[in-house]
Image 1 (cartoon, one colour):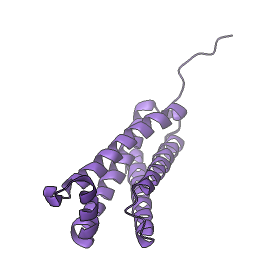
Image 2: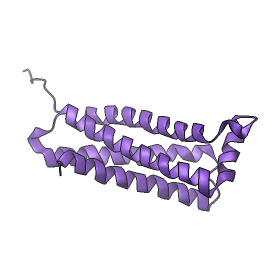
Image 3: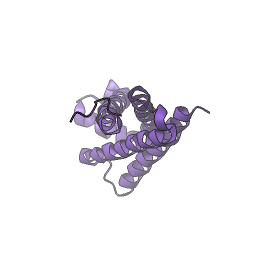
Image 4: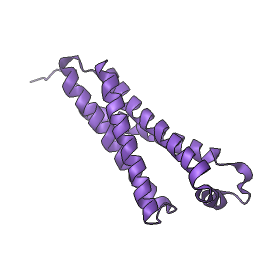
Length: 150
């Protein structure tokens, strides 16, 4: 399998597992309705993307460049986002519909808008954080093309 694809799948799945486990843990303590705990999702996403780019740089060696590192970070974040959104969609629509209605009631007077908007928000948050985190981390991992001048 292609090195970048294996890194993306490995770290994307690990990031998704961390996000799901974190959600279930805060659900266990009844804190899943507090929106401030969602901020920690960013730390899990950041760690997953950072680890993926770092691992890819190590395994690709001198073949590492900005574009390939950027693709690995983006695809890792996108994979984690879509699988987590799929989990949350199943959870909200089939396992805990009251949770979905609680969140919608906080946003709208009429909850008939549907939970699709919640899944859409999860996807948009995940994709935007993936882009920002990947751009940020690639500044640390990129190979400099500047020539040292004396």
